[in-house]
Amino acid sequence: MNNLPPLAERMRPKTLDDYVGQKHLVGQGAVLRKAIESGNLPSMLFWGPPGVGKTTLAYIISQNLNRPFFSLSAINSGVKDVREVIEKAALLKQGGQTLPVLFIDEIHRFSKSQQDSLLGAVERGIVTLIGATTENPSFEVISALLSRCQVYILQHLHEDDLLALLNKAMKEDEVLKHKNIIIEEHEALLRLSGGDARKLLNVFELLINAIDAPQITVTNDNVLENVQQNMALYDKAGEQHYDIISAFIKSMRGSDPNGAVYWLARMLVGGEDPSFIARRMLILASEDIGNANPNALLLAQSCFEAVNVIGMPEARIILSQTAVYLATSAKSNASYMAIGAAMDLVRQTGDLPVPLHLRNAPTKLMKNIGYGKEYKYAHSYEGNFTDQDFLPDAIKGAKLYDPGQNARENEAREKLRTLWGDRYKY
Image 1 (cartoon, rainbow, N blue to C red):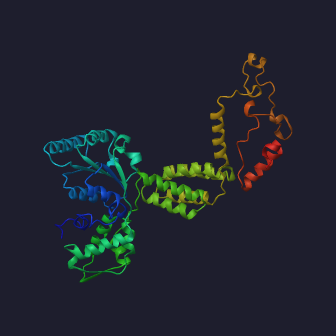
Image 2 (tube, rainbow, N blue to C red):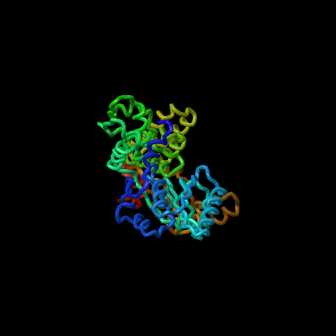
Image 3 (tube, rainbow, N blue to C red):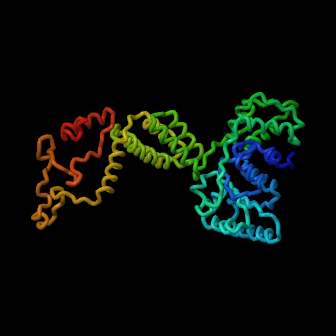
């Protein structure tokens, strides 16, 4: 068995009818299947998570249309490799052969210059490009190339698809069909796979090889016992990096400590930089909590400093404490909204002059022309306050800060109402 390719490779489908999943693309009457059957195939990008059949689908397409198939991986290929393949494809086209398919795995890892090297071949019809990416092509593929490709989104495989794949492997694989395998429980297998068909078959093969018995009974316990570890799917450099930090921030903003610590754990297990997490909590403490609880900003700042001093693994405790505190704190985005409103007002009104009474007067001339003349020093008045205007005349009386609905800012509102009257009356 050691001389055989892995189970996932042995079970790779060779026709569209054998292909599992993606019915919205390749099922009967689906859009991509129609394009394949018509032979009018555009250059395209397959966008989807790992293990859902992007490479396999590209190969099936080339075989179905009897097209020469060239394959490159963006991980270990450069501009030179791309040009060599394009030259070979051009010679085939000149020789009267059908238009070759050039498949590039992980095309999002190509630099701009590498992607530029593909553009001419696609424009001149030397190859039909099929690129596979786990990242949003809108961010990772140059616009000139993206505009010349049809984007197809591949989805995680459903539970029924994955179970059908296992049953097919047990019935048809040259090794497994000779074994007596009974799947009593499948939840652990599916959980470890994460919707990735390749990972599912790898885990299943690892399990079968680990159990030496006339009858192999698959249960959740023996799956977890024999499969060492499920590495959480987390790509620090990719789109999921931003999706998970977004879920983390939104959990704290939404006052859910359970969601906060879960997404925190996902990032830490995935190897995220703890300083990055602490920085984002520092922003949230001001943006989403603000003066509803000023201590949140102090704790977030202390967390950031402590994480950078202590490091992992102990930093996880400080990060968890801070995330829970921020999630359970009172919330206010009043300061965030205030600066947004102020900046919008600045853009609308331009560089309004500073009122004379607020201007600095470091020279005698400036004093003589009225700089600072009517300024009222607040500490010279009862309660350290006197009514005067601090905005340019054109926007006098504008209210940019609207206190949030929480205990601390309700107190601030009452004080502002006492000081400024109608401006805070509502």
